[in-house]
Image (tube, rainbow over all chains, first blue to last red; front, top):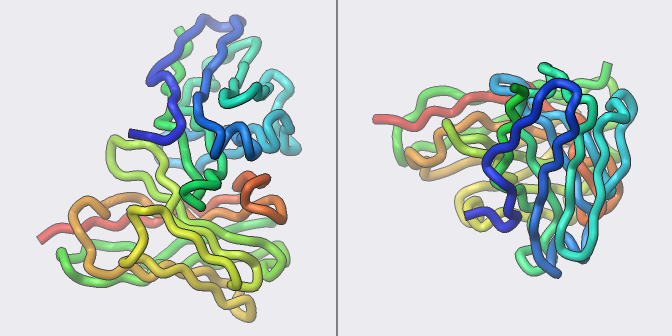
Amino acid sequence: QSVLTQPPSASGAPGQRVTISCSGSSSNIRSNDVCWYQHLPGTAPKLLIHNNHQRPSGVPDRFSGSKSGTSASLAISGLRSEDEADYYCAAWDDSLRSRVFGGGTKLTVL
Amino acid sequence: EVQLVDSGGGLVRPGESLRLSCAASGFTFSIYSMNWVRQAPGKGLEWLSYISRDSNYRYYADSAKGRFTISRDNARNSLYLQVSSLRAEDTAVYFCARDEGELARLSGMDVWGQGTSVIVSS
């Protein structure tokens, strides 16, 4: 059982907007910044969002992140087939003194 | 080119030890904190350990405490993970990853190795 809770799956049609949630607690999401990663099987994970809503250079602005209280969200607009991947949220946990991942959300583009 | 190359994985028997390595190039390794992350077959990403740029701070996931030791050699631009008393549940792809910020609580992991596979089986 992951410290951060994500839905196991999400889906949307090409061009649509999809949102993936990440629920935590006061010791992780409320106190620290949230990151989001995209992971395709057999490849290295890719940082999509850091510091709750910042996009690294090269990440399209179709990807956006937000945080409120003990929850965070990743939104993907203008869905494309190449967005089909696993998405993970992550944050530092002050109580555990460790970084924690969500269980991951498998995004299917219909 | 900024790059991390993982190595050292393989097929090992339960109870054996292994040292994983991560070679950095294309950036000033000594000013970045580093991590190890793994993914077991059919499972999600699991963060294992963090080491600050000067090795003064090291943190471990509960699953890694006691058997895993993270270390680095800034002169050799290399990161290591020593894993002892390997178990079947340690079977996974192991990735090294760079922290993009100065503080772990505010940072993401922005550069990743390609991963090295560890299979623990008798």
